[in-house]
Length: 543
Image (cartoon, rainbow, N blue to C red; front, top):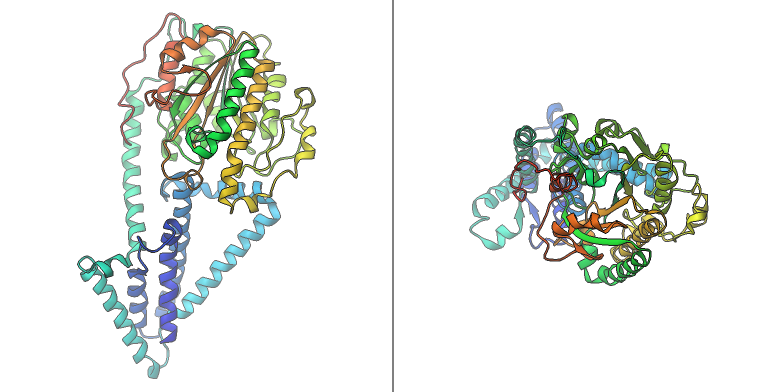
């Protein structure tokens, strides 16, 4: 009987714990997982046979797997603001491993994974032993009576939980609910596949043959620069706003003093807390890429993007992606003339945990390698700045630009700040460091603009997404700031007509515009004479 009770407590804990981890208490999710009572009760009624022992082992494995997936689901909701989709998201296991590797190093990552695997194996073995039916005839009666009581508890929960408030509030079906959510996710994934195919067919994607394609940008470099985790929450959250807004005002003064003009607005990002490639792909393709399925389908299609538009307009195109450490076939699919990932960037300094190189070096490389080798041909470059990636440690200082060189000058700052394993578990520290990391990235961009932005350049600086919901809180709009910087004031006029306003702070009353609206607005607005995009589906519909 003691073994039966222990088995029920352990199974109940495995199923309920993820819900408590997400909500922080049991007031809204209950204390009793009714599936635990049913499973343990039914196994207690079985005779001790080889097949029943195998069934107990299989049940233990299944329960531990559900526990792991449910905790992963909690992680998705806290970091990406959405539930896991098992039909799409398993590829992120590799991303989690790389994130751990970048923050903890190889030794600690391997140790953590080994300890986790051994712990799960031990729990599975112990649970299988506890669930084994009793083998002695004399000892079967009591556990079978216990099993019947547990099945009765399950039945009572189903029949009376809705009519007895106290009982209903404390009972839950977490495994059943998780399975139902995944079945619904799978159904919606199939629907989404058909919807996206129809959207691709219905939405014109090419500006081939357009008269004066991007003519207002003829001979000008266009630099689209994403700042990691730069969301509107940085400008509206009271704690962060107190740090970021004064720095933005200071940067505006610095830019104005060097003859640079700035306009700012905001766009709605398709993602939150991570998966930055959704924002990058949405921005350049004009398609709403808010799931891996939609992103993969776009990549598998012949859909043209801003890269094709600029190439047709006579620009050389490049992508500068310092955080990508392996092969990146997407770059070839998108048609960039040059792709610079970490192996292609001659950086001699240290990595800063996950961050492969500081933003100042990335921008210096942009100027001294990519722009310097353009041979007078105008450029379109997509740049990813990653210093403001969670956990926002260390935050290095801005160096004299002449001393940046190959990056070796950053070596003394490798040990700056607290190690990630300490910062990750301290929410107050994360909230304190986040705006500081943003001001570093904004400082780097401002220094680059002051020093290197000439009369023939247009620099767009925007966020890819807001930080993780467990850092920002649940009420996040998913909007990101956009700053447009140039010495040619005429280049700001289309942006101002689109709802942007002069300065570095977006208009809080600007109409909500999604990132997938950008291409269909930008290309006509900067073509000479202006062109007009075909009608598009409703841009604020839920998908």
